[in-house]
Image 1 (cartoon, rainbow, N blue to C red):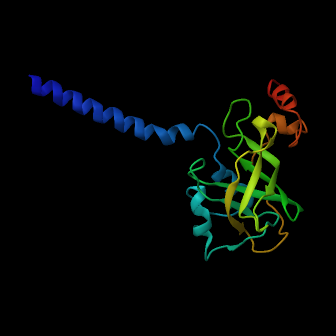
Image 2: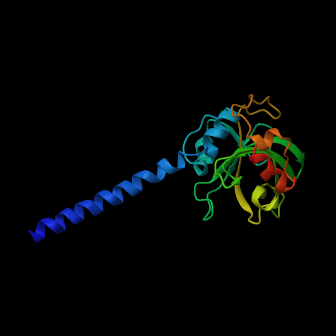
Image 3: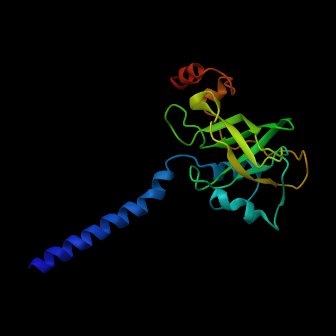
Length: 194
């Protein structure tokens, strides 16, 4: 009788742990991830975690160290960003600054998975080679405090200045209200209530 209780408890424990582990990816499906957004925006047909995009692109897409309009910026995985990140270059502002479109970076209104457009990115690498960047982070209204390693840029068509696909995601309300990086957070918060 005691044996059955322990066996039942052990089985229940295994089932509970299995259920918890299986539910983790489902939680991530509740909001937009950077990978499907970057794939749809850029036309680069790579799947899997963002940190694997750089190596997967080898032999299929041209890769390089300079930002180009329409290229995918591939961030390396780190302790704070273990799955990496991908974003699409929208505009070259200067040799050390670009604007990107990406998803699931800044929690806006406490919600993950938001699309951000025309986001400021600054090259902070010592060599000026785009290997380390700081990215605009909406909750603090400034560039993020952490520098993020970049593996490089994946060029969808292999041509500088190639035309971009039309965006396939509707911009959130705050972006439709002419919000741009640098605007006060009060403006963002006010627009979320509409």
